[in-house]
Image (cartoon, rainbow, N blue to C red; front, side, top):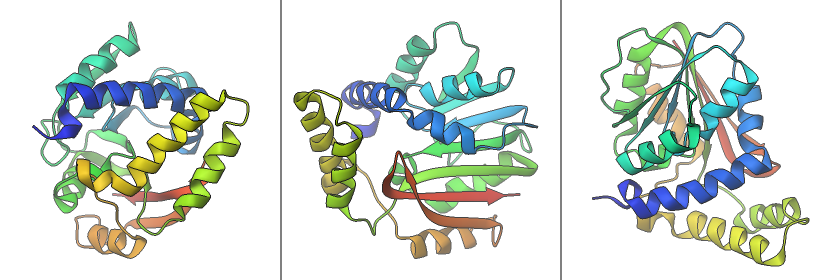
Length: 225
């Protein structure tokens, strides 16, 4: 079993997700999604499902779906979301049971780095998106200033206790420097463009460096059908 599918990984994800929610990361992502005319939204690598919870708060009434490789993560999401109606499934985005032309929006936050075959995953997302649907990914990338990112995290958490601030810095530092040891793979912008262009999306993409919570380690990958 891969680390990302273990109960320990699910427990760590719960801690990280709660902190991201408290910091406003999920709200920042939700505000960038074109939710106005959407009906169905899929969150890939949903973890605890808190991104879906925030999407529901921003745009009530949507049909929400969450997919994660880890059954333990899906169990955590079910507990965290309580009575919120969400279709949660354990599985890989490389091959799903969703109907073709089904989703208006597919989103993914810091999960693509665990995909074994990104091209297959992009092709499957293309299949399940409705015509004129779009996918929005917010992912850390390879060419980043790690120390600059850690300084920004320290600044963001200036009002937190020293212990909590040190813990957050150590956790993020480990993930960015040692993530390959637990199955992560980060890509450069050029590599991402080549991967997407070779998929069913072809030239229907935009990939730009961006910041979330002012932390400059992300790319925003927009794909459209």
